[in-house]
Image (tube, rainbow, N blue to C red; front, side, top):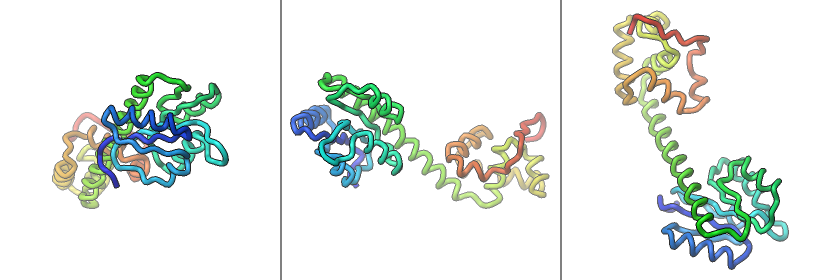
Length: 224
């Protein structure tokens, strides 16, 4: 599966350019993997650490183009940041690549520092994504530790209900709500209702759909 070391993938059919970019990246301390075609890259299992793809736009023969590879990766849910390079000046292609989320589009010949800066931005973007994924995974694991009652209270808290209102909705005592709420907050390592809302929102719409479905968030004076 690889290590957490940053990996730069280079996909270019020109051997000289491919090797030059590879050497440049290795000099900056990155692990590098080189490919002569988009098919070769698609056959590669990506490493688990932060990564960035340096991708040529055009390839000879029947090989998928860089844009086609970008589309394939997006459809497959592979969010690797892409730095496009191209020997052709095509505004339409560059605009399309950037609209689809490319980090940069560099026409050949480009300055080494330009490429290194683009790769650095791509790796930083991927590191942030991996950190978000780690936080989300940790949050979901903690939510799975909740009892059904604790989860109900969590969702009602996210809607803005205070303990007295939650007790009325669940037909239990206010003391019972406060006991379950304290346990829930301790398990989730949270300190306030706002943090509960942020946690649920961070877990994506599929989890938020599990909320109570109320039409308003009644944060009101009084109650606790």
